Image (tube, rainbow over all chains, first blue to last red; front, side, top):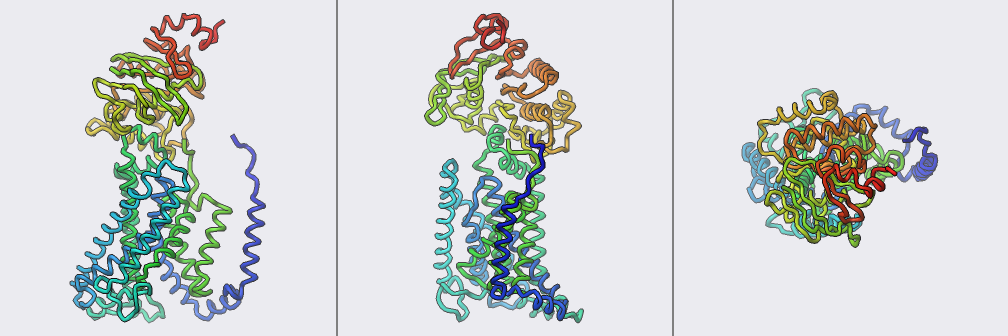
Length: 371
Length: 235
């Protein structure tokens, strides 16, 4: 029983002050020019709202990817480093579906809608099956090994999938190159939603009639609606269904779950299926929203989503959603007011500070302990 | 009903169970007593399939449990209130109990079983929407037993139900164990509190460093000089 008040973490404060000092020292490079930023906000306050919109939309995508990290960590305490690459495969899968079905060349709204729905379904299935296969292949037999072993295996899987993505990107018959060169360069993911909206005679910007200098496009709307419904669906699934409860039980005490007749292997497979399916859906959303497809895009997205999961409290589903939106906002404001080149540095500064001061994350406070 | 024959279990290179043989008959309370590290909990974990025996057989009503994975053993009618209680701390009392009924295909009597558990442990009903981790030690013990009962097991394995509880609560728990037994559930009870265990059990086994050194009916064990000296603290 600990009765004394917890001692303040002076050492942690010292280290982070040092980190901040260095950040301010390189301020001009990191573009942390406070007066200039203040002036920019003053000159165009409505721009702030614009960055907010972009941040929420990108944050929604990050949150969906973060859910996969957090669910897997919750159940087998493994950071699935290949998860970001499953998302990348999701982008290429949906691009290929859109291309093969001829949706990319079409301007017919019905055809585009059907194509997008098909792309979503295929991306979800491919992501789910790929993620579950990774578990079966690379993690299951290492379940009782020292924790470093599956971690290294995860990094290996990440490399393998990235190279699969590179090979995939090089297949012109699967992924049209739109004038870009070879497989290693970024490819265009056509802005199908705008095409569809334009052919309907509508303005892509839903705020166009308001006269405000803001863009809230159909893309933002779709991404947010899709992400929020996936989150609500997942939350209800985990809270209400028997399988969802079995997942939580397994995460909280694996031996007790086994003892009660829960088939651990099945629960873990289901977790990877759901996480992978979400990553696949995020792939389609990101492709439509940011309009690029790149074999290496899973790395950055994966790290951002991982940071989001840690920020919210790894293992905590609500936390991953919250962390996703926060990281999306941070990245958007950094892109807007600082410099896009420093966005990742800021994201990782957040990660370091969290690990120093609140390793359990924002919502990671747990009642009771693992028995 | 349950029969263990020459069961050997290892933790890595440590030989934890050195040929355990015991039987539990239908309707009995059988207790397994012994000091720390004697292998009591390991015996229960081995029956449940959480530890696999390296040799020997475990048979429940003709089914060879040692050949089944843990989650299937639960479906055969073996339920356990384990060492350390192992309740789910971030699930509510109700959810914990629902998980207890996970193995049962037939959900029609779920509410009746729930009421039955609440009748045995009224405290759980008061705490129904509280998270398991916020319960007191005694309540957690009740939850662990209630959760095991929700599976409607043929045999209930109880691992140290008195551990860390106030004496008054220990008596209550032991009364409830007898009640559960009278309702027709066979009980295999592991206890350090040998006096309490022998006072409610029909038969008992004494375990020492992975071997059974003595077995008899509970009354005779209580009067056995060696048991008196080593486990009951009587000079």
